[in-house]
Length: 86
Image (cartoon, rainbow, N blue to C red):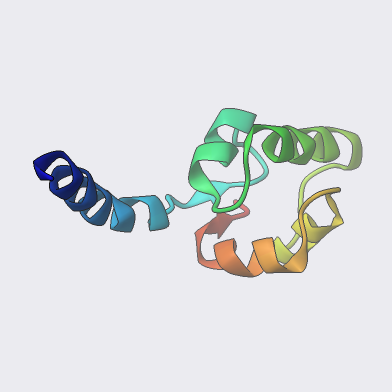
């Protein structure tokens, strides 16, 4: 029972940290940086962002991120406050 309590306490204490994302420049960040900074973006989606940026140039606005395959408007909204362009 103590192990379960410890596990539950750990989850409760670490949960807020998982929700906090660090602001990230989507025009210069590496795939690793994007994956760790944006909610709902893992390694493959982060690499898709980098690939799209390489092929099409810099993002001009946060909403342009939704043009990347696998990134929808919901993901953009979840991360809007953490998306930097400059």
